[in-house]
Length: 179
Ligand SMILES: [Zn+2]
Image 1 (cartoon, helix red, strand yellow):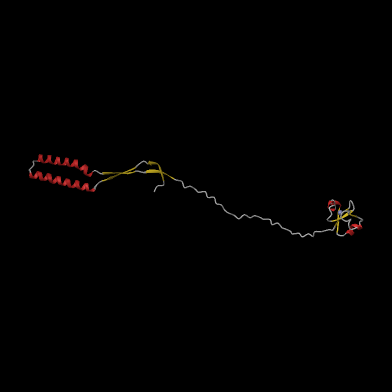
Image 2 (image 1 turned 180 degrees about the vertical axis):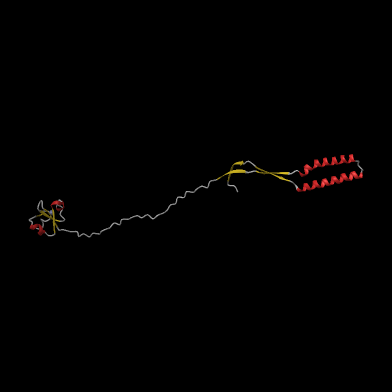
C-alpha cells in the first residue's frame, strides 16, 4: 500500500558482474564428436581404400571441420549479472501533530469572605425629653421644636426633673398645656 505520491525514480549505476562458465556438457560433446570423426575417417579410409594422400586430405578436412565446430562447443559462456537498483522517492504525508489543548478544570478556590454579620441589639435609648443648652428650654421628644435642636446643643433626659434642676424652661408649645 502506498500512502503518498512518487516524486522521482532514480536509477543507480547498474552493478555488472561477469561470470565465465565452461559448460561441462559441451566438453563431453566435443570429445564424442572428435571420437566420431576419427572413427568416420578411419571407416572411410578402410572402406574406400583411400591412398595415403587421400587419407591425409580427408583427415585434414575432418580436423579443420572439427576445429571450426570446437570453439562453439567449448567456448566458455559468459554470464552477465546486471543488478539494477532503482531508488524511488516517495512523498508521504507527514503525520500531523495534533495540538491538543487540554482544558483542565480546576476547582477555583474562591475565597468568600464571610461577612460577619453582627446583630447588634443596641438598646435604643428612648428619652422622653430633649433640651437645648443654648436656649435653655426643654421639650417632649415628640415636639417638632425639639427636633429642630442642633446636635451640639442637644441634651436628653428621661424625666422632666433633670431639666427642671438645671432651670431649663419648658417649651411653650408642647409643655404649656400641663401648667
Ligand atoms: Zn416643645
